[in-house]
Length: 146
Image 1 (tube, rainbow, N blue to C red):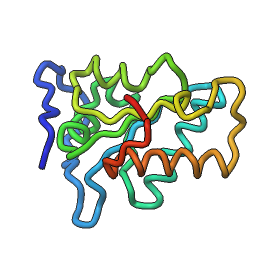
Image 2: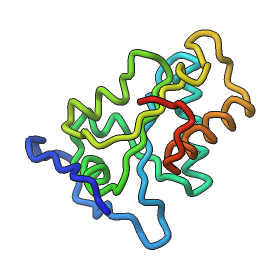
Image 3: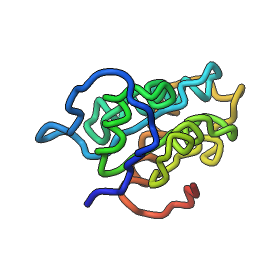
Image 4: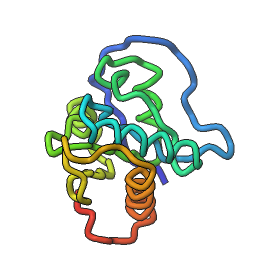
């Protein structure tokens, strides 16, 4: 099952790499805000851990904003897109939406108790964020609104 994540209005740029997942690669692509605060670092570390565990494949959010052809194609071909934002500004979600992507799952770390400027990155917080993301991806509603 594939979401319609086509974005025909994007101008061509960048390379021509085939971005389809290889057999055995996760069908979910994850993007993190990776902002300059502790919450942004936490979002980034959660996305990287999801990628290491094989729950999702991390891709480059800056490439979406920069309209890099191969990175936009990765998002277009994703069966599912997960976005992790560290704070209520929701920069990662907004970047994807401005690029035309609408069918996304959105994990907002402030809604699970992590506050910008007050959430030093720890292994425990990374694990909690990874579990919240996995719960969201499993379809089990644990009050993680998007």
